Length: 507
Ligand code: NAD
Image (cartoon, rainbow, N blue to C red; front, side, top):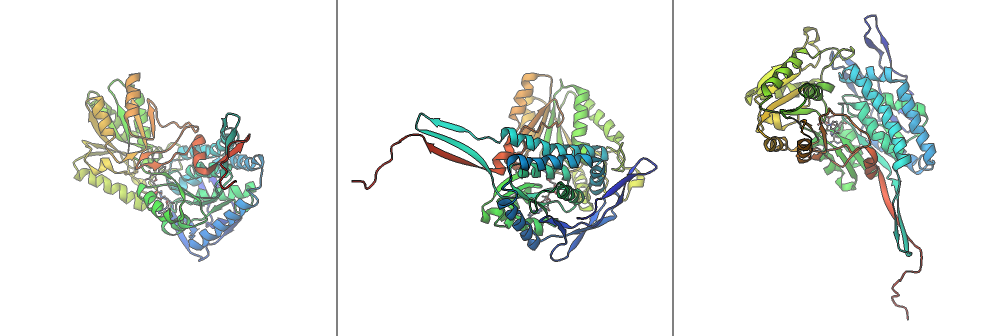
């Protein structure tokens, strides 16, 4: 097993990473190199310096991992009682909790997400495991259907087999555990293909799960590129499920590539979510929620409110308040506790977000940005930005930018607000601010989105369904909804009496 990564607090009170080892794959309970011995470099978004090298898995490694996972599914893991299996899930949660102070800095170091935010994400990761252990105990139940005195029909849930989990870089540790926890708790085995831009905490999770002592092969991590490791996982005939979180175009490519082997897919895809602020809204709270909703996680948030529709009567005051916030947001070192916005994950993504700011100007927006301290010029920093005078025909309003950038528009009345909110191909989340209760519900229900919050920021209740409509996803994660994907429902029909059976051929 590779050694654990260490971080420390320096004299200035800043958490620094002391040492990061190169990363191997985790297959069948062992840390191993890729079969072809290839590696890729991993970079720190704050300085763009190389952090370490990562084993670059490909088809042969995926095949090894899937075989190990299948063996464990048919063997050691599959033969455990539910209580025995769940005791491992609780153990993983406890180990994550013990190491929050170490995992959160690692995540910030790798992704540029501010430390105050990664600490909460890591705590949530531990909670994901505990939550799913509880859910399996209390909600993984079948139905019984009595048919008079003739039949008793009942359903049971069975694990499906090997779950292929493919995850993005924007909240890596939290999103990985959000899939791993229900997959393992329901009795499947797992091959995780984490995002290539954020491998550190996925490796740390492998070390933690190794320490928790799960049987070999139950949990495997194959790092590597999407087109090689990811695509091989999708095409593998012994992988029954693919749970994917990432871009809409990748999701559609994955569904094509998995079609020949008839897999089940769960798709958590991109978003361009609206926040609608009526003139009677609680102004200050709406400003807080709007600012947090787009600028938290450096704007790299699938449920970010990246389109603001504000009622024309309060628009100038609201925009003035937003400008004030944008100028004062603390942009800086992700390892510092007071940083609110850090650098974007990678130079390629930085260039993509920057190109949208240029496009916004070409399309006729007034682009208002905060500032990035000069000493941070080496990092992938994009200052929090407002796109004023935006309109629905623009690409910057239609496409997911996935950075700290919000398009600002106004509306006259409720019908127009709903029309504008629904005029994109995405349908992940939505936010409505009004003190009029009836209007709040009306507008919420009229917005095409998988999830909607009224007078609230994005507060998750883990029992509720998570997922998007339209091009934002297929299926739902969260609560017992995840069981529909991670288990196979079997119906068993039991004859209680002597029901009529046709007697073909009987003389
Ligand atoms: P991405 O689609 O580029 O990559 C996601 C993962 O897919 C990575 O692990 C990548 O290696 C892998 N991949 C890429 N091509 C593949 C292929 N052909 N076959 C198999 N795997 C492949 O997404 P990203 O840039 O890492 O993440 C950002 C996107 O994720 C945004 O669009 C964001 O909205 C979305 N997202 C959605 C949710 C949600 O719950 N709906 C949550 C977080 C992020």
